[in-house]
Image 1 (cartoon, rainbow, N blue to C red):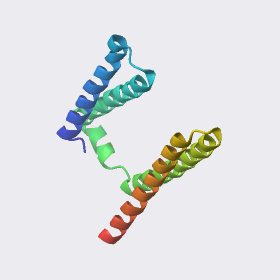
Image 2: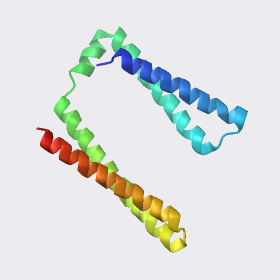
Image 3: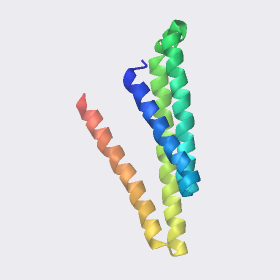
Image 4: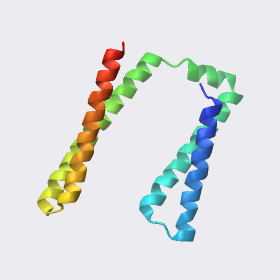
Length: 132
């Protein structure tokens, strides 16, 4: 399950997020950039620790590999569905509020983002549906 490509990806993600995090101190970067960098650092460290444990402990590797794939797939799809619906509701709510506050460009951006999510969903659904 845990490949060398995954290890390289999370190592690079950790390096990039550290550079972004350090830019806060040297370049006085904005918090909107630094906060996601902190999250990426934590995620990378956790994933690298899990990968090291996966390689080192055969019992843990068997446990990870033998998880119920069908159940995990169901939970993943359910979580994606909830995130998609919640994201669209929040984007359209923000667009509605911004429109009545007079911020037309920001409202349009929120609306276009929500529409883009819906179009991506429909295209991927059709591709996956007819790929079988």
